[in-house]
Image 1 (cartoon, rainbow, N blue to C red):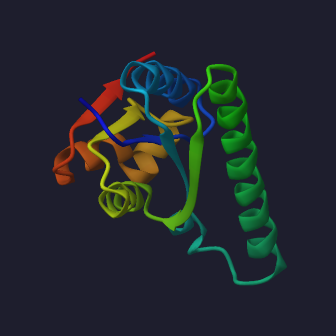
Image 2 (image 1 turned 60 degrees about the vertical axis):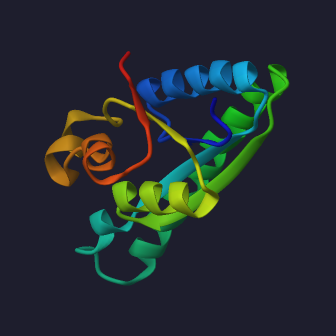
Length: 142
């Protein structure tokens, strides 16, 4: 029996599939869903700290809020409450830290992010979580 689920979302199709599975799990266990969207600040470290950096960060933050809004709407239609978390930093580390903070007993992630380039540049977030977290992790493929 699961009591707390954390789902990593990034707006990709595979993360949407992971979220739909989280809805099914939440219904089965009669629980809420925690969702996390991480703004990868490591990608921004080489950009000069000026208005450009602020604009990019703002766009990423807006994307995160919009993605969470979509999740809340979809979950609401299924009668499930979503508890949102927007973090910044290394996605894998932030997912693990948030899961530990909320005492999650299941993490659900898509098998890959928005593009193959993410995997090359950042390494696999999902792989990082699977290797470094002691919490049961479900990997969803689409």
